[in-house]
Amino acid sequence: MKRVITDEKIHRIISKIGLIEPEILDTALKTAKDRKQDFITLLIKQDLIKATEIGQLIANDLKVKFVNLRKVKIKTEVLGLLPEIVARKQKILIFNRDEEGVKVAMADPFDYVMIKSLEKKVGDNVIPFYSTEYDIKNSFGLYRKSIQQEYATNIQKHAIEAQGSKAEDVSVVRLVDDLFSYAYTNHASDVHIEPGEKDIKVRFRIDGILYDVLTLSNNILTLIVTRIKILAKMRTDESRAAQDGKIITRVEGDKVDVRVSVIPTTHGEKVVMRLLSSKGKQFSLEDLGMSPNDMEIVNRAVKKPYGMILSTGPTGSGKTTSLYALVKILNKRDVNICTIEDPVEYDLQGVNQIQVNSKTNLNFAQGLRSLLRQDPDIIMVGEIRDEETASIAVNSAMTGHLVLSTLHTNDSATTLPRLLDMKIEPYLVASTVNIIIAQRLLRRICMKCIISYTLNDKEVEELKREVNIDRFLNTRELKEIRFYKGKGCEACNDSGYAGRVGIFEILQIDDDIKNLIMSRTDADQIKKKAIANGMSTMFEDGLNKAIAGQTTLEEIFRVTKQ
Image (cartoon, rainbow, N blue to C red):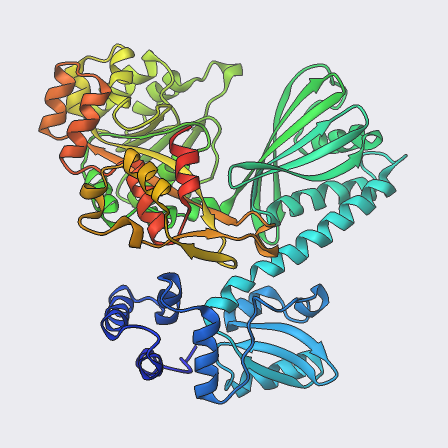
């Protein structure tokens, strides 16, 4: 889309009224150009100017009407006049309809072709208003909110209709289908269907946090569970034993793999479903939140023809997604990539994937042995759980293979003693491990309701206890740095957060670290040496993202200090 106003023009408008110091404004313009970032967005995120201020200034200069989308109550029926995909593509948002016509927020209110097209579509007069691209983008979350409300209403309606039905009846089928769609639109990773004495609680795990979303009558529990069992190819006549299964469905054109676990409880069968969208395998390291410096380290490591790259962290920290991002980099026609996983979370084109199967005694160790007979160049092992798997993986790395795998450890440094505990000789660990990537997932601040603030004395002291500020921030005064948080709004369900971003800690196995491994040094000493050699900790990476307006200090403490 053609820019309605240039960055240089915005610079002149702000300079004219003196809202920002000239030196700061010049620096911001240069930064925006260097980063190829939208100038207005950068000014707002750095808290140099408010979105309403810059929006009003530009509207005045253009001699058009201005709308502050943060102050407008947008009704569902108004949003529905224009599909979300069109609104996003054209950077426009319909925010009201009255006797005058349809009122539209536009980043380019002079796009007369778009205006005429809209008039034809809605059958009404279109009145353009200027709004910053930043505010328009942040308002798209309202589409999701509208859809969510619709799904919640439909599910409750189908639940009433399903009473006295059978699992294959239309009302039950629609109820379960809407449940999948509702979870998908909420970006839920897991769905919990929990039976109680009087009702059924439906909970979604969103951005790592469980939320109560629905309460249904418990007299339809059997219908819901039976329908899910049918889809997952489980035994419908068995209700006293735990069962696992898989459902492949499509939601809004996206292929979604659903891992299903059913267990008996005192009030009936409880169902937990993990949703794995095909979009997950499309993530790059940059998408996951890895800094340019860390990406450079990782890219050097993946270019090595052999050795081990280990991704570590607790359950749900994004380890497997990071491995898939690495496989995506490595996936070329001239290499043979084989994986052994439990389960195979995403189908990767051009990659030979094996799933662990306890019924046939195909575990990680046995599967890894089999893969070595398949002439692989690169091997991905879903998880190193035992001594046998660790031994085979290390030997594979020694014999000319690049091995990618995960371990459950708290940080990068504790991974090395963990391997030694698995009876891997120190010289083997030192000579095979290339890098260790430790990570966590933090909730992102909702861009719709983001606000900035500065730290008080107590907060400054608390932060200083956690990190060497002088090393990290150089000479910058901590009290002058602006941090960010979300107030809570409709778009984020009043949580102040929307989406997640990774924080990383990458330990390079250099000569200093190798010497420490050989002498069986403890994890604390290894970490201190790595930091002295330039490693950024997860806390420091999180702090960088907090300063950049991606997450909050509370999130960093919640995830790294628990």
